[in-house]
Image (cartoon, rainbow, N blue to C red):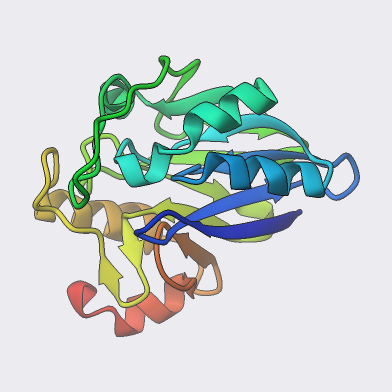
Length: 206
């Protein structure tokens, strides 16, 4: 598995495209903005996108969904608790009209295991940043797409609707810190980190 990384939108959201090197089939994780640029990258690498995974329903993680979905025809996955956010969402930090998207095709479930594009994914529900946030684990690669649940030496904000400080700490401690120290965490914003580094250095987890 290889992973393409793009920073999109004014909030520099991390959009990831993990793909199978043999088949060139892949998945888009959090098409947050600049949908046309994401589609151009998919086309540049001649990828066949089989699914679009949404870690949570905030606008800066779904803003490019329409273009990517139209271009690829891929199924859209989001948790049931955040699915309503596709219907009407707006960026809490930027004065712009709200966006709306067609409903998701599938809902993520706790502990769900998915084989998509020849890659094995495991889903864990991690509420706290939003009520329906998820982290997407690729066990064989020791990689987690963690949305805005955890960042390098920080955690997702919990002061927006559906947020909970207690829940996000519980999610991190019970779903992420149980993983091996060398598991790589790929967050929704900022640089990547590892479970071990956050276990030792994240001030919110001490």
